[in-house]
Structure formats: structure tokens, C-alpha cells
Length: 343
Image (cartoon, rainbow, N blue to C red; front, side, top):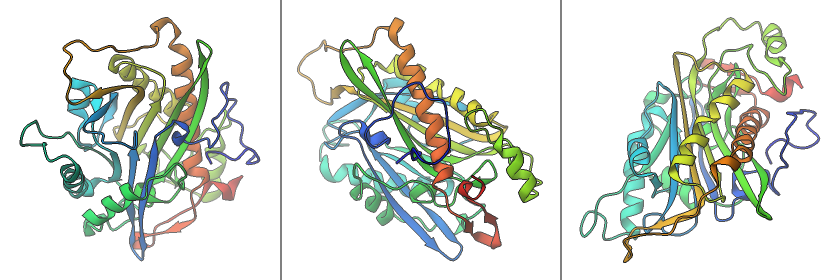
């Protein structure tokens, strides 16, 4: 997936993509969707599982970055403080964060009878974008069952475009949604994967740039678009199997802003631009007999290849979310075109 090799788009990437060109090229990572499409309803849930085991008992190291804070995501505070993720990461619409969080809490309680009894509570991670352009967002159509469906559907192969949490999203004046990509880097004779998945819902019509080509200006002229503001949001999730610490993952998260700039965003006032990064190369057990733990990490002087691969993966994931979009007429008759109509 990602961008097909025969799509005619060249991002001038330096690093090769993985086998699937998806974040699931990282061993153990899975992604699932629950998609709601009916009349004025264009919404859903996407779940990202950093590994297939019990995430509460075996956490992954993580970092995050709030590039622009016009957002309502849940769970970022503890990621910043403790540097771990202990639940699946959910992506949905803004007004469904509460429902998704309660469903995720119940999912975690089911397999962890110690939560809230003999140990602490759980930090659920739920991210969001406003899909109100195409979806009847006030209808609160996402239910707990849809969250569980997305988690249960998680697999190594998954759809991109107008699916899951991305069903009603709009990006740079076109139909946005879910996109993913991966890159392979080498270190000490081993291959490591850096992958990204995004939920794109940001940007001004006319600003789209693909591989240095300002194609958005030509599209805007054809569609006679009048909207000028960069508004919306984007959720960017970067994963890797390279052993990184939470400090390094915070740094990787911040680099996602460079990918946004490459595709034509300037992170407008009303845009919630959030990045979360995790590494499966270090896992932390909830219960430890040891007081001192052994942690592996990349040498900081060699992180540039990770940073560059991450920027490339996020950039392609954004373009892929547009490429896999579909012509959509949604709430109140609003219509958004797919990128492929203009290629």
C-alpha cells in the first residue's frame, strides 16, 4: 500500500520502503478499522496496536509532540511524563473521544483484573480530528462496539483512505483520511523499520505540494475553491523497531512538523497537529523484580537516519491518505474530490 509505484507521483525519497509500505512492516504492529458510512454519517474508528500482546503488562517506550494544540486528544500528558504507551492508540472524531476512551478502558480492564485494584489505573490514548465537514458529528454515531470492532479487526494488512477514523476527513481541500508508509534503515549490520500512519484533516485548499510540485494551486483553480484558512487537524503516529528512548522518541515526534511543511501546511491557528512516536525495540514490563533495568538506545550521533526516514514516512503517509481517498458527498450535501481525479 502507501503510494503504488505506478501512481506517477515522485516524492524523491532517499530511503527504501518496507514490504507492505505500511506501518505494519514493523513486526507485531497491527491496524484495524470500524467504518460508518450511511447518509449523513461518515465517521469511524482506527486502532493502532504497537504489538499483539498485553500492552498494559508489556509497555512500549513512547514520545509525543504537540505541534499546534487546537486538539482534544487523550493520554498525551502521561506519555510526556512516563514515556510509555500501555494501550492501543485510537483515532476517531472529536466528539467521540469520550465514548472511545470508555470503550478502551473496558477493553483493558477485561484482560487486566489488577488495574485499579492491586496496581494503578490505565492511561488510554485516544486521538481525534473534526470530521464535521462530511459527517453529522453532533449525532455521536461512534459507539463502544465500533471501538472494539476496530481493535478486533487489527491486522498487518489494512485499507487506507476514507476508512475508520478517516472516513469523514478532509485535507488540503480534497478528501483526506488514513494513510501509511514505511522506510528501512540500516544500523550495525541490521535493518530497522520506521513506519507512519496518519489521519489527515488539515490544510488550505491550493497549498498541496507533492515532491516539490505545487499541484494544489492547479487543483484549486479547477475547482474554483474559495476557502483560504489552514484549519482542521492531523494525527501522525510514527513507529519503529529501532531501540529508542522516550527522549529520542520525543525528538522524532517533533520532526513530523517538517513533513507537514513539505506537503504544504503551515499549522494554522485552528489546526490540531499531534504526533506520537513509539519503539518496539525497548519494552517495559509493568511488574519488575529488578530495580535497575537494561535499556538499549541508538547513539544520538547516528539518529539522523531515523529522523530522515521518519519525515519521509509521514510525508508519504499524508499523500497516500489523499491518493486513496474517494469522491465523497456527505453532511448537508458537501462534496470533496479525490486526489486521483487530478493526476
